[in-house]
Structure formats: C-alpha cells, structure tokens
Image (cartoon, rainbow, N blue to C red; front, side, top):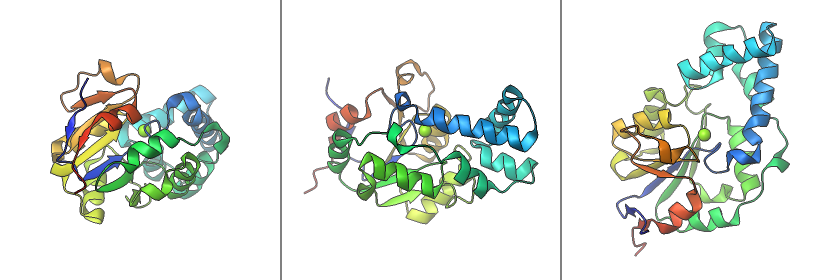
Length: 221
Ligand SMILES: [Mg+2]
C-alpha cells in the first residue's frame, strides 16, 4: 500500500506517551500506578475511589495536574515529579523509529501533557532526543493540557507553528479534535486507531515507524 502524501508537511508534531513508544512497554501503567498512589495519599480514599477522582480530572482537563490546581491544595510540580519517577528500563531504545524520524524534512516537535523532566528522560532513553527541535511540555503550556484549545494556542504561539503544514501524531483521539479544527493533519496512533470513526481523525496507524517510512515527504532539495 502506498504511503500517504505528506509532501506539504514541514512540521512534524508528536505526542510522547504511547505514541513514540508503545503501551506494551508498560511504562504508562507504571506511571498510572504512581498516580493512583498519589491520589490515595492526597484524598485518603480507597485506591478505586482515588482512581475515579483522577479519571474525572483526566476527562475534564486532559490531565490530572489541572485538577489538582482547581480542587486541591496540592503542588502540581510535586505531583508531576512524583508520578513520572518510574524506571526507564521499561523502555528500549528504538533505532528504527530514529531512522524514520531522521528522514522527515522540516521541524520535529514534541507536544506532551507530561513534564519537562519526563519528556527529556524518555526521549533520551528512546535514543531520539537530539532529533527534536522543541519539546512543548506541560510546564511550557502553563499546566494547561491537551485537548484544551488553549494548550494548542500556546504551542502555536511559542513555536510559530503553521497548522496547514503540520502533521500531528497522537494516541488519544480526543486530542486530535482541536488540532483538526486548527487545520492540522491528524494521525491517530495505536492498536485502537483502525476502529476509530471520529471525523477529525484523518489517518490511522498501529505502526508509527512503518507509517512514517511509507509517507511521501517533501524532497529535502
Ligand atoms: Mg499519549
């Protein structure tokens, strides 16, 4: 099957977690376990009830950190440091992804609801940190998270992103809605992608590296 025509794309925007590494790594599960522990300590609720609280914040704000600011006397920076402190050995360097990213002409950016520290250490571990021009992390967004449109506005302003020539790769479909509304090209990544029917999902792949390798891209000239 021929790859998609991305010859008009000059800005390659990637979510980090479960997009640039797979859910099968267990990395996100490890973070979620720490989030649950954090909310148990914070609220005194049972693990199930505490998880339900953070899930409400995730659904309402895109991330737990804004919920902490809104509803608790808790330091979101302490939260971010705590929950992202999981062993990197769950992740493996990905030289095939590295080659696929290297081939892309133009700017490569990361757009994550995770913290700066988290993004830096994960990208280093994957062996791709040097390939990204910018990492737009949650501190840079003022702790406003995808899919809040204000997070997208902040990204665009900070890095002079032109949506019409930007492709955004992301594993959470809901985060692609504001991107599509702004005029970005959207790619849903993950095993669930093929089954998605949302109108704002323009492309789908369960194999990011293969998808990138097959894409027609601008001649670097
Ligand atoms: Mg993700």
